[in-house]
Length: 290
Image 1 (cartoon, helix red, strand yellow):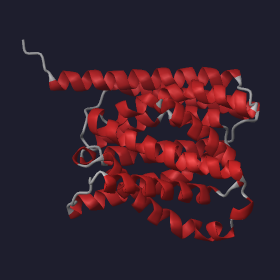
Image 2 (cartoon, one colour; image 1 turned 120 degrees about the vertical axis):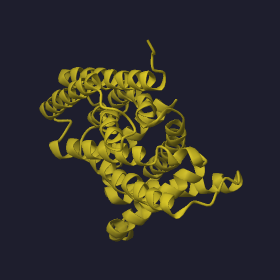
Image 3 (cartoon, helix red, strand yellow; image 1 turned 180 degrees about the vertical axis):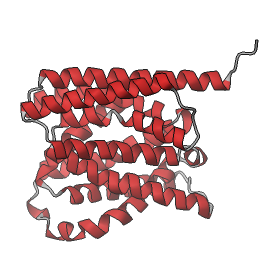
């Protein structure tokens, strides 16, 4: 179910290209805040947060729900939903790098080998998308940046997220993200012809904000608190074939054979990397004594 929601996110964010990306990102984050804040209040899940942790949450929220929301909205308007979903699945690779930098994990050469394979898959897929005319170098680059941003911010709060309810935690992160978004999207929000957007655009905005936003991110941070950032991202792997299917059915977009090959290479490399990381973590947690 998680992968289904994520794949529709890719599809609808791509289809909302008629609305300025900063506006899409801001509306999405605002809906996330409203939805999760209401749930946290109804369930009485708000807790006092120490200043040090609040500063970390503010940084992570600004990066994730602020910069990430903007780059993924812009990236998916410039490249295809299929290409975007393939590239975004390199996120576990970047989370591995940041986890090592923050000394949450030890370096693993087999995992790094998987990362290199995944990056090669991105190159193959990008070449296929550009040849097919369904991708763009700028859009693909923004998707890589969005993967880096969400990976960094997720690792940053991986320990803190265990202390708070996902609804309250997501609402707070989204609030700081909106603080980052508003300054450079306010003019576009004012100039957007809201009265003439049409029902379809409003329904897609509602989906990416409430269901594909609040529900997905709430579930994602719940997974992070239980299994870690990289393992939580495994569920997005299944979004790639679903996004390809939806793009063909709903948008009539074909897929270049290099994109298929690239997708397989990315998923194989990232999957191998995560397997090696989990294997390494298990070995550290349960050492064998001879």
